Image (cartoon, rainbow, N blue to C red):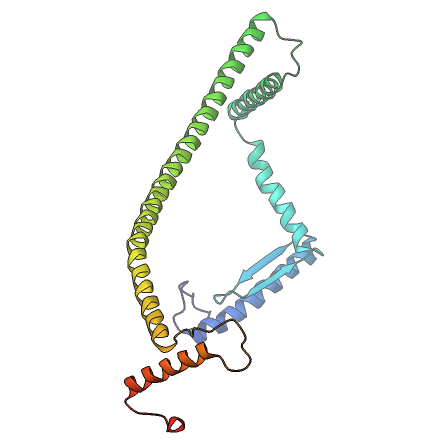
Length: 244
């Protein structure tokens, strides 16, 4: 009895699927090896499992060389088979871009004052007008920049003047307040000084002395002493003991 036909569809059972993958992978690698040996063919086989694991076989010493050979054969054929009209259009576009690039380089050198020999009078006049226009734009930009800076400086100047004016007003107010306070402070100092002077005068009385030195009995001096003593008795109301 022969083997029944196997239906090709995804195996739902995970274990059965892994077992089948291992068996058929080994069989496929074996067949690739047999093909390379029996037919002297360059065979390269690449297998990725469902988990991303790599399995490969290459009959040549380097898989990379085999892949490069495959790439040259596949994509080189595509390049050769391109339509002739598309290649011609690409070449014309290349020539246009090249001419444009050379023109821009020549114009840049002319603006820098280089390679002016091949230019005729009309081209030189056109170059001169272009330079004048560029110079006007540069000067206009520079002037506008300087005007903006001047405006900023003027605004700063106004701010500083306002601050200076406010400080001057405040200083004047402080000076006026000090001037009003000064007379009252002077009057208080004079009153205190007068009180101190009156107290000192009440405590200390100057003595009237005779500048002439007298040795012996002086009737004038004795008279003055007697008058002073009598005055002291009248003031104090008693007689000292040494006079009794």
